[in-house]
Length: 467
Image 1 (cartoon, rainbow, N blue to C red):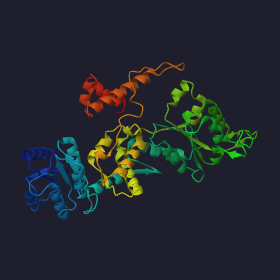
Image 2: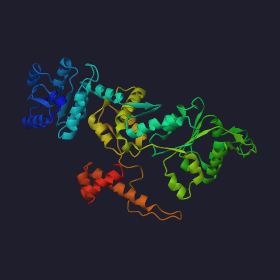
Image 3: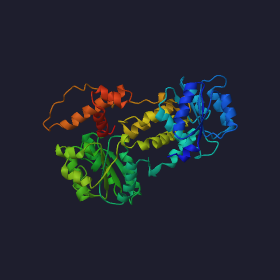
Image 4: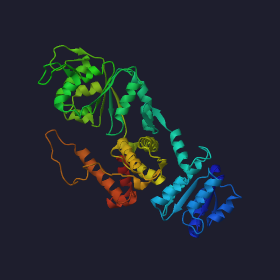
């Protein structure tokens, strides 16, 4: 069936390489587009005087007028026309110049056909998004903004996060404890903050406790406070964080790090709504809603005896799992846009956008550090940027978490608490898959060959580990 939308869109291909012109003409005619070709910029301008063109795909290196000069001329006469430049001589300088002149995008030979198709489709779909004076980059930004969903300080577009957005208002006014689970950097504290801000306690304190960041010998006094004379140096009464959070919300971040003695005391507060400060014989009653978070599997911690079962069920009345960024890649473009705006403003730099190739690099990255890592990548890229565009060379990506490059053949010992053999083997297998993908430049077929696996088996493992 003919795509009527495509049949009404006219692509002009400008390149002095006849074989490439013919190849692209055949390719996009098969896609259903109207296609015209020109061997140089002068012929292209003459053709455009008598034809309605929807998009121009032009080489940069051509005899006579080059692609950047051609682009400059087009933007004076056809400011809304999306122009994509192609070159075999890709460099930072030409990319920056092209984007400054108003190119929609910039691709290098040899290009990936599927990526070129997608770039052209995106450019054509964005023609009417903004005014005639807007560049392709601003059109991309406008589309991303239109698709953005907000809840409190969170933004998202993925189905998984939108389900959480729907759940948070339903639990915000409940007095029940909430346990937020997810890997480090996924945004668990933002979820906790949204629960507080959208509930009846929003006018009262939201107190954050990093259970893994306070030394064990100080944590009890920080949580429950102490009386004067309770220990050497206690020269005054000090209210604890529970009392500071009275009528509000206490967010226990990394609750799985709590030592056993404090788990027992926390259980008492959750059950009785009261506690004893250190050195006191008088109980203090508090009205505090508990929201906890952890990157650990607390069920496994309970089974291994490292976390109290009764406390686990008390704090896990409502569970919210925040998925890792690699499982909600739809959120990456809008998060990139948000962080670009944020750090362009704070650094005073005019970084307008990100190239499609740089975005592809981010979309194909596994993000072991999740949203926190993405923010770090964009902040660094903006800070060090020498142009108004983030290009692939500006990104610093790491395939492995720090410390994961240790000898994979080293065999850990079984402890008296037991050993999670299945989890250990899965972790090893996942590391080899990531390593193979790195070596194969993300080619699944080549990565499967490196691991001596058939493609079906390799694809099953990719799905299993969410890669």
